[in-house]
Figure: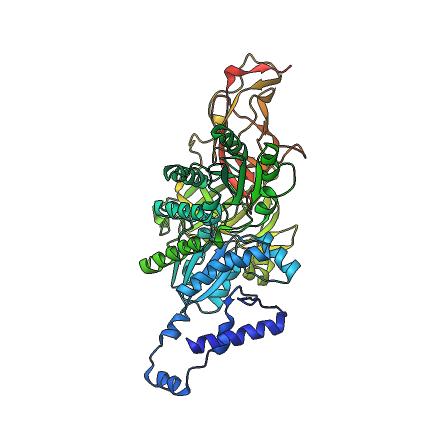
Length: 582
């Protein structure tokens, strides 16, 4: 161990010389995101006698074996330096103390925060891809990943998908759980936050925790945590969210219903006390939680402290890591078939097939697979026209390849970009780099052709929107009407304005859909992308409607989270509610 630490120290000094990075008293953040303690200075190198003995016997020491294993702590990140050090940094230090034999590394999932820190502070922190590539290059064979995420939501799922792309580049990947996973976790968190704020629980003060909220199903953790508080008799504790439910309005209503409160204490239910805590919660703007509650007549005190500062919360992450390490269960990747389909199972011909993409920015809306003997080729159609060419391989390989090896787009009759490429196997991820015409840069993508979705090219699967339901009633003349519309899917937080306006012209119908937030930057209907028709207020789209009284499958892309996420919904327009617009 001493020899390894000495080598790490030398590496740290080299980085400082090249990058000019400073160090805090507790730790130094280098370009590779490694957490390095100043106590390394006092470590001595392994004696030459020990080294000679190892060479003669061929024995591998524990320290050498440990060098093949590393712990990667993955966090959303924050641009608030003080909060980062005492929350994320504290969790990392607790993990390092529990596993001193392993190197602890850092990665953030928010590229926006990474870019801010780089430009503002000359501080370099890896994103997940960079951290994984660095671990591969450093010869790490077993990678233990501990996320500091609150729940198994979009961020955790995205991390799992990215790890799945590296399964064949490590001997083993172990992925530990986020904070709120088991019932025991909820009980431990309730104990931690109530003990920390016990001095405020005087019967006249409401203690309110502000979570982020998410469109994902995992948003249910907030309601469950509230239930655990209620079950424990903590009647003066309330939980709300910024982006989902329960909302601030729900919290205000609950406070008024219980009555008797003269003061409200606000604290973030987030690992770090960053932008949401300082602005959405404690800011002076008219819509901040502090201002809204003060206008309701309450005295408000804000505690700008992240969950990561609480030692008991740090302990939960350490326990999750210990559980994962002791179980030793290797991460198996996102759900998909383990082996590719044999070509001999398919007769020669053309088939429709769904294709899974690793990126929502590389959305394949249609694919046809052609089987000829032992060969398979596919024609894929993208939802946009931003990529001028593809390459079967990584972006690095594409940049060095000949132009003749790239796959150029071909416009179809409707102007969509199509690409014809060979398919080596089904149900297996295939590296497919995409070249952005606008940014003149290659992007790494992976696509998987899903054998379970194969249908004959001429077969009607009943999935076509045009084939479902009833078209516009024959007796309805051209014009604009109002119609009741119901929305299903997502987390249940989002809504659309109902009744909506619908315009009928001949055999076509177009509806004007207004969402309950301004966070939707596009919608997909039958694979076609539709942009907002307004620039202010809630997001509004005009989309085609193939039939009434039938669920119309749509996708709404929300930018409320750190990265955009496509959320699946269905819209149903009810013909019996149609009225002529006034």
